[in-house]
Amino acid sequence: MATIAEGINDVHEGLHDIIDHGSVREGVGDILEGINDVLQSGVGPYAEGLRDLSEGLNDYLHGNQREGIGDIREGLHDLLVLAHGTPYEEGLRDISEGFNDILHGNLQEGLQDVHEGFHDLVTATGYDWALT
Image (cartoon, rainbow, N blue to C red; front, side, top):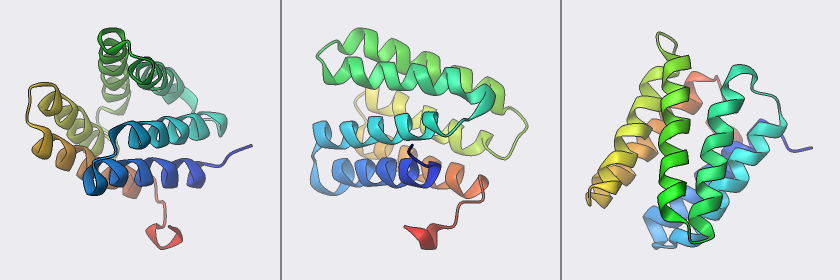
């Protein structure tokens, strides 16, 4: 069974595949793998939103961008609703805003927001970045 740390590392690697190397397909695959790893670790009420993200990324990888985007939006919305007032809210909001920037053609700013939001989110969980 995968651990949350493995999932975090996979998502981190995927973001850097996209940002640093322009390898979108490989990066999205790593992010999908990371989310699925985290889902195996038990994430309580956040599981539904993460499943929607997973389904959306999977749809995207298999050529169904329209449905994938819808699932990703739904998952991010569900996660934001659950995270309202928690330490996770800021990171999730940045990720959501970054995703919307990407959809509206502002790729670099969107990727930067997603990356910053991911770091904020992971830091809020108490994960030790020295382990990566």
